[in-house]
Image (cartoon, one colour):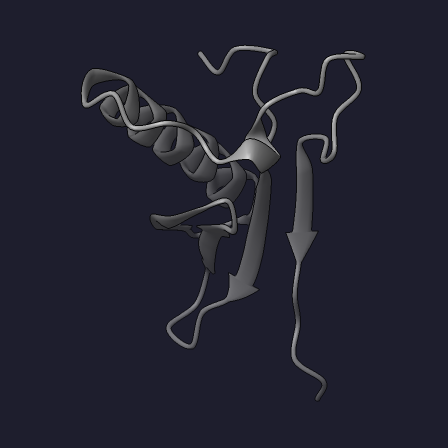
Length: 87
């Protein structure tokens, strides 16, 4: 489970094949997909959690945008941004 000390943003974009592509701007290596918005969000959270675990094992520091500041406020909350291209 993702700890409350870390914050991230997921960006969902419609896929040409259907469903949604999910990216995490703070972790550019994280890309996944889901058939529905709900599934895409769940897959995104799982991918972020897995990559954070990898980073921890390899002693790779998290991007500063994912760490809460000292006042306990966050620069980003767990936001989901869904992007659709104009029709």
